[in-house]
Amino acid sequence: MNYRSKLSALIAGLALSCGVIATLGANARQDTQGSTADKLSTTRAALEKLTEIEKAISAEKRDWMLKKELIEERMNLLRDEAATLEKQTTEIQAKITESDKSTGELSEKVASFASGNEVIEASIGELETRVRAIAKRLPLVARERIESILAAMPKEGAETKLGIAARFSFVAGCLKLINRFHEEITTAPEIRVASDGRSVAVTTVYFGCGQAFYSDESGSVAGIGTSTNGEWTWIPKTESGEAIKKLVDIAKGKKTAEYVSVPVRIQ
Image (cartoon, rainbow, N blue to C red; front, side, top):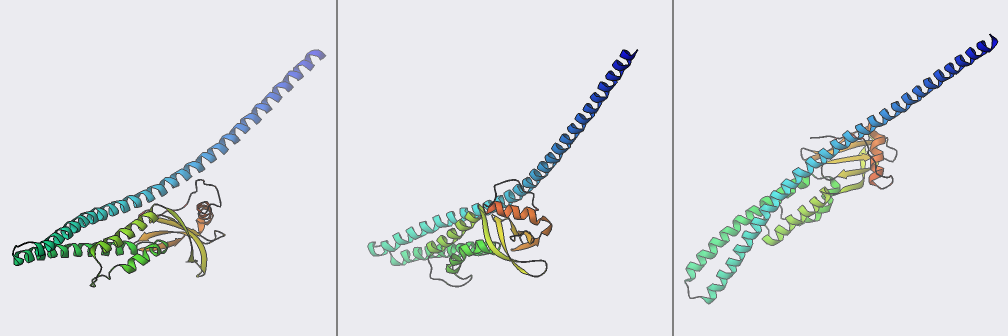
């Protein structure tokens, strides 16, 4: 009887130990599953924010590329017309001294070509106006790149001695520099006004002409910027200061690239 009692007690002890081990294993699996679920949720949220940023930047880039293509097509057409008219005008002027034709008839043709040249001058004036309008929508760091070219262009509505070729080259130069800025990620030291009215030194990261983020060294002053109604609007986002500061550090090369969840403004 003593032997059977000891055997029963041993079996009961083993069963109890197995139950404890099984319970601990189940708890460990639940902890691991919970941690994995949290990581998946964080990663999914970061990817969703990244997708929003990419969509916003892609939309701005598509709009800009469409406007750029329309202007360039118009410029190419007008440039070809100008070249043709200039060639024909030169030929006619040469024939005035070489031909026995009536001076009056040739003068009329020269006058007609001169009239066509006036049409082209009016068109280049329109292009210059559109470039100035685009420049007003640029952030200061981008506008500074084309400031010297804008200054060399004729004043709107004023008479100028600049030739059509020179004026076309100024327009093309502006568009080239604007497009280069739009395709780059640019960092720039700037001054922003904090919510308490202080002027704070920050670093601003521009994603082309569509979206920007800024932060000071601590991340306590941070926000976003977008182009709205012809000028840039800066919105404080102190609650996202840590994430925006990380984005700025990545852009400056201080940290390795990773997904960062930051607020965006989609227009």
